[in-house]
Image (cartoon, rainbow, N blue to C red; front, side, top):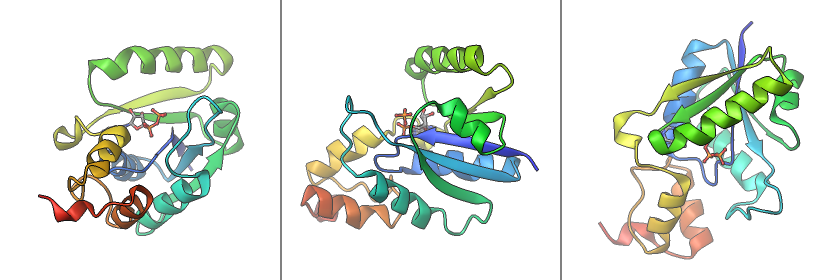
Length: 166
Ligand code: ADP
């Protein structure tokens, strides 16, 4: 049974993430989405529980996907899930530096764990959770960019009705 772990902040999950989830779930027997319990450095818009629940709802129709939260070292979370593979998405060159650095440093502490990169689907190549939050906060519709269940949560959190504007 081949298990992969897809870690991230998912604040909130976007269609870019969802696309990577669907594609990696089709490659592996089991995909564990690891939602990072962010350190004090980064204060997320959604709580850990909200981020986990939104992901669970968005992926409920993909049977081999589970969603869990984690803190501490990613490689420990990967090992705890009997996995040797970390999935990351690459959008543009800007992602490359930091992603390569993370992959290399993870290999330094856990040489038997590899990072596998999936390139973004073209339509989501400029999409990030930050872009979604910024647009939504100005009332711009983000309904193409997030799973259906996330839209009302965003509107509620930001106190806007994003579907009012095209
Ligand atoms: P992190 O804080 O770990 O970067 P994110 O939730 O922003 O967490 O992203 C998790 C992973 O998903 C990262 O590998 C990121 O590159 C990837 N990702 C984010 N947005 C997209 C997208 N639009 N297309 C493909 N991959 C994406």
